[in-house]
Image: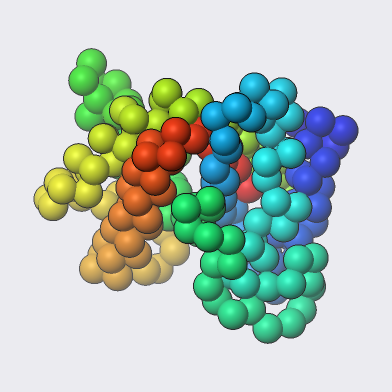
Length: 195
């Protein structure tokens, strides 16, 4: 991904690097934005047009571009237009990586698939656009995942214990389910970024 095609990549990477230095933890997070059906081709051509220049600010209620200040700690973009999965995306990715009809990934894996490209002290984000017609199968699969009570939450190495981790991941799974359902109902697709 280059700066010309995805100009927000540099801004997000620089901001995220600030978070890494401040928190001493890796700050790779997941952000998704709804895309109207009649704009999907535009999104496929240039996804950055549909991503915020500062998605963390959108998710945490901070002033765009702020390096310090007070966050209101709630999403400022309406939930029907943005999905923030914090760092739970990796567990949701693992949860959906297997169990599909053919033994491969579940349909919802398309919504969580991706891996950033690491280099030095930073990374290039992973960006994908999903068409409205893909969202129905994803939404149905997410609903199915939400109903599977005994599904194990993958291990994570951040020190959060089992019960807390399950609650954390389950809350974001439910948010992803609601977001996909809203997109299906409104006939929209989405663009997401892991970065």
